[in-house]
Length: 124
Image (tube, rainbow, N blue to C red):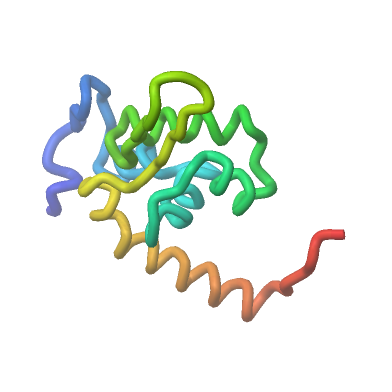
């Protein structure tokens, strides 16, 4: 039996989870969290850069997902300047960087699916 089945629950940041997969999926699951982490994988970025690279996400969703990733300590938010216009830069924390091997595996699998079962289309 692996660590993931060691007890009835796992408590992380005062939240109870039924298994370790549930913990991981709470941190990076959903439509946009892993995509945000992918875009921060190689370089820190400003909100406007992320928004431009992720044209399918709404501003509200992007803001909420960034806030959750920051609360879960996967990304950091650095604010430069004291009065508008301020500069805000997002980047991966060391904890966030520990997800890169998983992200690379997900990206590889997604590429395989796209190549074998899908097609690349340009937006009109």
